[in-house]
Length: 280
Image (cartoon, rainbow, N blue to C red):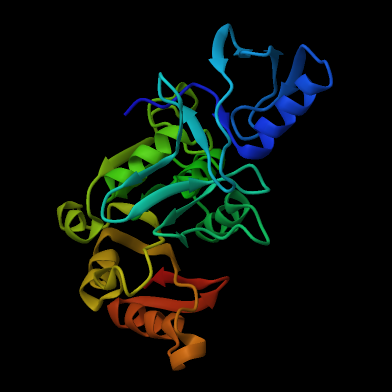
């Protein structure tokens, strides 16, 4: 799907523009792509002009919501599928996303992109063929591209997530010239698609599945055996786990994951908020 190239609005941005207008300004400078760039806009009582295109002043916008121009009005960057998928602005510029109000990426203490960068560094992607099992917003992929990965093969099961990516200027576009054709993004369920991948075809893996209660198959011994099959000996895997249910049930998901990975043929250790494993 082609990426959106129009302006993105948030309530604070709209308030800033209208405050400038109320003070008598006819022009303001701001970012309309979540911090990627700055643009000057012309302000008027009926609306504002950005990059030669006129837009009406929208009605009051909601907090914690991104809006895009759908050709007729500014609409929320959200869509119903198996749940409500929503792109959510953060203080870092880089957005997170939610499914039914549950935040899918960390953003309280660190930028989602900086968090992805720390995890990507563990598998040392430069010059490697890398498998990205659950592409999400594509922040793993963006960091890998920046770090000189040879190629990254990314799978994403949700069409709603893929649509949100087209609105997100921080999500890498597989067709962008800057990527050099190194990002291969496929709509597919990795729990099934992995069976089609060749033995020992990857040098590294990044595995950031939904929580266990939603996608238990991506934490299974069967799936980990498949990860071991497609990863070359000595290849690294980072598996995000978080610590779900630890306080309420005492369950230690990271250690459970590490034990299954060891059984599949990995050396595994806890790292950051997940497990770092090396194919034996």
